[in-house]
View 1 (cartoon, one colour):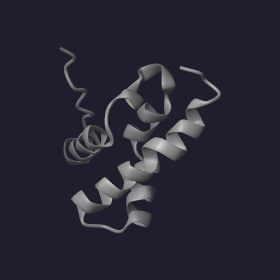
View 2: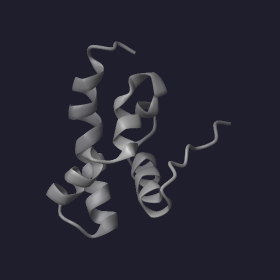
View 3: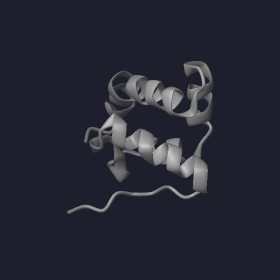
Length: 80
């Protein structure tokens, strides 16, 4: 992808629905979900365009985040 455009795409297209799903699944408000996400190892991976996590849906990313919070390990889906 376009390295300079990725932060914008992340902020506009990926993070809002991801934060909403994390808040819903963890039973916290969106401010707390945003804080949790931004301070996580998962966000470091998501922010790295080279890892291509952006191609997963917000639902899949939320599942990955919640599982990483629960286990401490980021579960990368198997590609078929």
